[in-house]
Length: 204
Image (cartoon, rainbow, N blue to C red; front, side, top):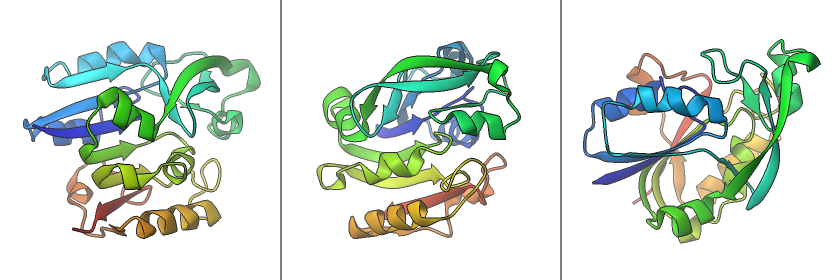
C-alpha cells in the first residue's frame, strides 16, 4: 500500500480527499493542530479505514509552538496559523483570535521516527504561511518523498505569494533533485487551487 501525508487538513473536504476517494491503494496520515477540526476530518474520511489522524503541528523543530485560531475554531470557515497577522488579514479582530500552545514535530522526525516509513508517494502541505519554513528545515537526503504539493498563496506573508522565501524553497527542492510539475494531475481536481499551490516531483 502506498503512503500519503497531509499536513494542515482543516475539515478534510478538499482535493486530497478527492484523490484518496479515487485511489483506494493509499494509506494516509492526516495531521491537523486544531483540535475542533478532528471530528470534521473523521467524518470526511469515514469512507476509509486506511488512515491515521493526529492532532499536532508540523514545524521547523520538535517541541511546542504558539498557534492562533479564530474563536469559532473548527467550522467550515476556519482560519488558523502560527502567525497572528494571518488571521487579521482574513478579517479576524483581536477579540476573535484565540491563542494556544500546541505540540509540534519537524518533518524528518515525523517520517523517520513516528511513521517509520520514509517511502512517501505524496506529501501535501497547507499550513497558512508556514509551508516554506517546514520545507527549508527538512533534510531530504534522509527521506524518499516522490511528490510534494504545497501552498504558495502566503509564502511572502498573509495573502501574498511569491517572494524570496519561495525562491529559496524552490532552490532547496531543486538541490534535492525535485522539479516543478506544470502538468500536475491535481490541476483537474475541482477543489485544487492551481494559482495557490505548486507541485514538485522527484527526479528518478
